[in-house]
Image (cartoon, rainbow, N blue to C red):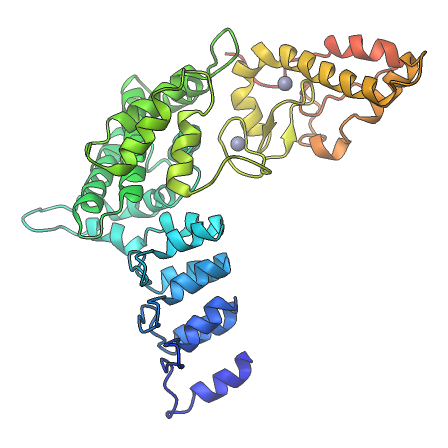
Length: 418
Ligand SMILES: [Zn+2]
Ligand SMILES: [Zn+2]
């Protein structure tokens, strides 16, 4: 137990890094068994997080990643675990975790970027008078660097919500520092292409922000709009796709395996088809395979979005802010999507009541049974100022009129159109 271990560790005669017959330390055992408190206790008592005496060269980080425990993986990284160490068959902790399907741990390892590495740039180096990065920018920049959501809209939102970052001079400094980190990642002995690509990509988005900021007062909202604007035929955000493709293409180390792999996956895909550059990039950098089972916000790509557009029920958002931001683009296709949704629903209902010959009323009643429960859309029950598709749920009066009636549902949320 943790209590017992604590008592034992307070004695001077205990070596916290003792090894068992396989070369495993107590920390490795605790990590593998998913005992977070025990890991923390051992680390506090000086357990060596990079001990490499295991018979197959496993480290505590590898055991943590294999166990799939995200908190322990994180704790090992924060304690200074090296991510590039390989086991006896040449695999890193991230590769081992990917091999056994612990993708959350892969994401955590690949995106770990200790604050100290950024703080290096907040002190003047060599002949520099001023640091490359003002200290006040290190926090906000670190937040963006460590994000696992690489959606360009999300990155611009993070910039936009911080007044320190959302100005030309600050972004100029930030993107140059990111470029330096990218270079370092590629030139260090243990090359880290994933981190290099991520830094480069975020740097490119920052440079886009600068271009838009130059156009006048706060123009980041305009950038977000450009990123979300869909083409007339199907609402596909062409500009967003092009920006991401262009960023990848501009990666300055053309010999990088990761770059070649990305280009191979993206180049043959016609714009508007799957996979999108965003999904290919996300998969390469975070290790996230596909987008199954989890709902992603249509606006910002954030995981776990659950608020559905109540008119078409075909898109989901984090919250009302994301819905409002997207409305100018979505309203053009919402009605079409709604028709698709209705059709799907009708098809499903028809199949159900296939045996009933006069099944018309049955079709309709099963339709209304299939309505989404109110809880799912309850973003803004309290707001009465305008009609909002997120909450506006017109219950059909008569089942038949109901289908047509929704068509007239006011489609404009309280999004301003100016
Ligand atoms: Zn969102
Ligand atoms: Zn809709």
